[in-house]
Length: 133
Ligand code: NI
Image 1 (cartoon, protein in one colour):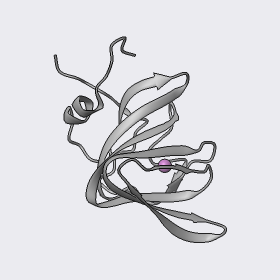
Image 2 (cartoon, helix red, strand yellow; image 1 turned 180 degrees about the vertical axis):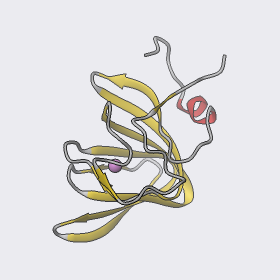
Image 3 (cartoon, protein in one colour; image 1 turned 45 degrees about the vertical axis):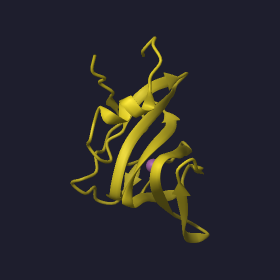
Image 4 (spheres, protein in one colour; image 1 turned 60 degrees about the horizontal axis):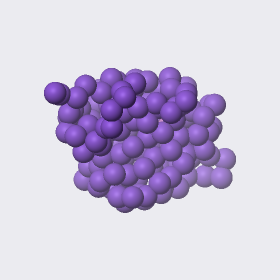
């Protein structure tokens, strides 16, 4: 964990891979992660944790599926949404977005149960953020 301030714009500029979150910092046992996204992620669920999304730039849709049925929430820059634990969800962005995700360290991007993972989706607990000098 860094002891210096971290600029999110600079952090976002340090990588280009889509659907591959970078860990910006940790708060107790939670990760603050950022990701660049475009296209469709994969249906998945987290059995034991909620997952917070904040859109930094662009627009993100999150399809949700539970006992009550299926719906989609539409998020623009500055919007926050929490996917409740146990709820199947599939983020997607037609035009691309930069997002921030807040969730317990060790949480897999593809959850505990998921559809087959497409090639463009990185199944990870978050990658290290590598900032240049
Ligand atoms: Ni998730």
